[in-house]
Length: 529
Image (cartoon, rainbow, N blue to C red; front, side):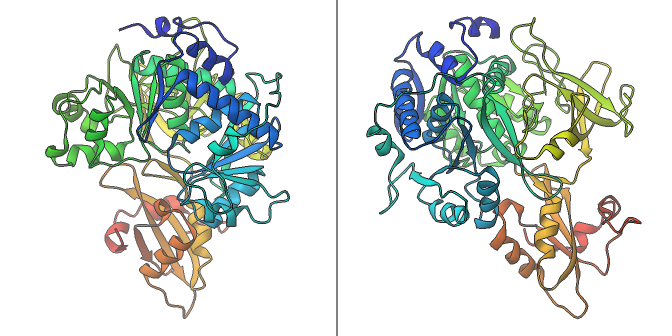
């Protein structure tokens, strides 16, 4: 096995654009497999040609440098194709959760002011409704079967004119805007540059010792930072092969891993817990997985001893700052921590720095609780069209994570809790303020407060405290139905607790910390799960 820096040095130096990095990897052996999806294999050369065709299509359709194009579909090769083709012309991809309803998708498409929408057959209707009313109506294309009036992206690209592609694309150009839940209840679009994306992939090579002959299986959603900055960018950096799975399925996970000869996969805590608890008859001992990223201590022994996977890594990052800490491949692994600060394969490159500070921004000693502040080369460029929240997110160049942690004497960080009003459920960050606002809009509701409560599979479940208007009536099921009509499924609360009043600050704001401190909330609530 080659060391991470040796893997990067297999390829020619490049300019840290996606196009430059791709060309350097394709030049080594253009006929190696780059992507496997839905039974189809793309070589580096064939995919590079598809990138050029699709880039010409975007130019011919009027997409200019800096413009945004939305992708709203489950995992598919079209995600990667759109990303690289847009990067080729200096445009920006905006991935959208395919489970979003019209209201949620409307906010993202309108805030991003997208010029085009690439969808799937099962998301087209929502995407069209969500895009209605944009100042300039975007054009649509589909990744899968064409509808009567919306063509396939591949067919459009095949007929694209031989137009010139721009030559002024740089590594500092924004390539990706990923919307993440904000404490105000409205998503924020974290902007990342091409340099950030490529560098993030190089750091992932270090994180799991990714090799050129590795086969990286993607089961996490490609509208998230993990699948993009770790799996896709890591595959690019290592010159490896990407295996794209539409979505995670516990019952077929081992079959897919074995049949595709996958060697690396990223998971979240709930996935690991589910796989640990699944019937062992589903397990395929002939799998080739050698590394899993996202492992937690509660199931690490099972993955190593029962599933036979030697390299198990857990770490910490955010949409704004991917890949900050991780337990090392070589070195001490403390499973119930987020690991020490990660690094780049090149030891001479400055990488992440972390501080643990109190409410006044003063550093606290080891083993004391404080907020994590981070400086890293792969920090976002800012929140799109939101200078105020961008400014609030930083202090003297340090990104304020809003997460409370502890650092031990060995430099290993442990997560304590979230300082911000964010609920982490099934790998998603969910803004409590968004749920408060949506549920508060119910005609029978006077006030609502959504908080996190522990989930059986790890991470959080959602409990909402509801105060009804005088004389009004509503059931927990009606509150959930109201949410289902307006929010993605993972945002629908599991627990609904009707209360006479909620605690408030002197200024009238709901005091969620005090409300959440009551350990009997889940016991007293209606459990809809």
